[in-house]
Length: 469
Ligand SMILES: Cc1ncc(COP(=O)(O)O)c(C=O)c1O
Image 1 (cartoon, rainbow, N blue to C red):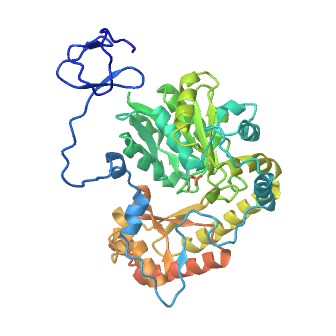
Image 2 (image 1 turned 180 degrees about the horizontal axis):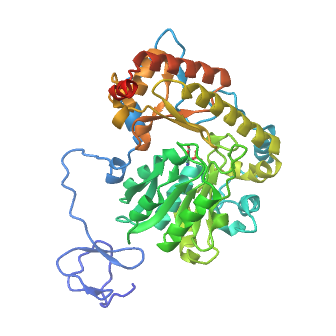
Image 3 (image 1 turned 60 degrees about the vertical axis):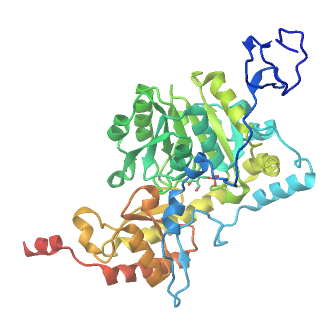
């Protein structure tokens, strides 16, 4: 047997006292030889007297702030008013935003072909990866099939991207307010999360100074969400260039969460950050969920933008290895992907955008005149943030409520309208409205929010002082 220096036969578990195996001499402990010839000590016999099965540290450290907050709320709707939930970022819940027939047909064809019932390579079928590469490739940021990794939703893309770039003890920079999954994943992996501020008064641009001040030698990636959940904001080209400058100055790669890529209202332009980067390597995460309105199909991807070979083969190999932990994306959707990307008509995308913009305007215009509220008009995605102005000098406008959680809870109790308190995004005193609901529901919901605010709004002492002067 490999490396054994005596003539004795070694049987697993036999006492090998004094025998040298692989350069190590066994003394009093029983040694076992593993399949690759290395030695390991026999374990002490289990002395467990009773069952004690505990969740792992990773499980204990996996916390979803949205669940933590929502599950703690007493959500008892007013029985006289049907519930309107403006809280869930799933565009399919009301049935008013079906996906396109071409998308459905692609899926039916994939099933009928019987070609996609087996396992695919862990990073996805080459043909499907090529289709994604072709769809997103542009002269400034060209992509080949090998630059694409297919994943189970954008969530797995983000998981793989964080996992390949960060070690326990590293830190990542995350927008505040921002999508809660980044923190959920990072904390469970022992990665520190540093929140950088977005500026509501500047259409949620990044406070670049603040962001830069957080970077240190353990910063392993900067997450940029554009367009944004929860803000619905879209960064200008100039702002994206400034973000790239900071990343370049400190040699920090970017994880671009671009799941809302191209979901931008007319008048705004939203280049991918990779198309503007000259040196910063970027892992861009995306998927079918939002733009094609099929979040349940769980199709996502990572686009590896590494024109200067900074990630190099090691990061690529790392992503391939990580993709092997689970065998990636559903094969039927992979089989449909090329046809989905090539055959979805432009009119479908346009109609979705038109609907989201129209509903955002209704919501913004309605809530702009509600006492105590300050909505911020989005430029894309599916969300609108509203300030309850219960912070700082405006605290006493709604003295009946402690905070945004209290405010939104009572909105359910009195008006059966549920908006997500922005504490779920580490941003207290705002709430988020999802604008995918049917138009008549949006109008009704805004009317009820008005009624609620009129009932609870109190002019602050500062307002009356102003009037006195
Ligand atoms: C910003 C952002 N990133 C990623 C995701 C996750 O996408 P998926 O459903 O494809 O996993 C979401 C879903 O709401 C999101 O809002």
